[in-house]
Length: 164
Image (tube, rainbow, N blue to C red; front, side):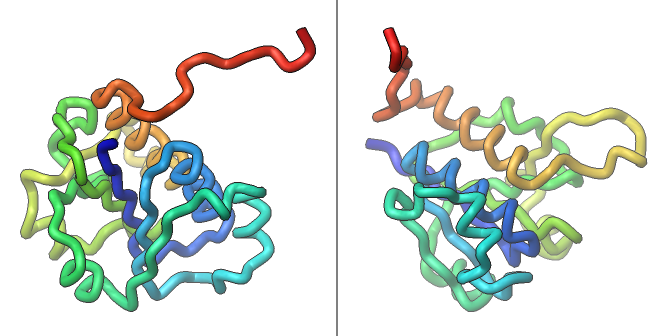
């Protein structure tokens, strides 16, 4: 089965990270968290947002971005409001990494400047007041675009009624 990797660089809000963990668990995506985080992993808000999906989660922690990059080979796609390419115009290969920055500042510009061809964005209103989308929503959109391209491997495609 193809492998999808989600990378959170220095996440700040536990509820967002919990929601993203739940998305990763429900889609069999691997979650990579690059520290420092703006909360403790024992935070009840994190656990509550992830509900009872933690046992389904494949998660790895890294002390910093250098540690992450030394242990993973890409290809990397950097989701940023500063990207020039639309996320849905990219063909995502097996084993790719979707990389997301912290809620307060996004990814470091020096990283983006080194990899402009790998920077992607979600289209938004052409108004500077609309700075960005919520991180957990952006991750979910990216995850499901990749899975759509891969024809949703290993995922249940049909629901079923529980009372009828």
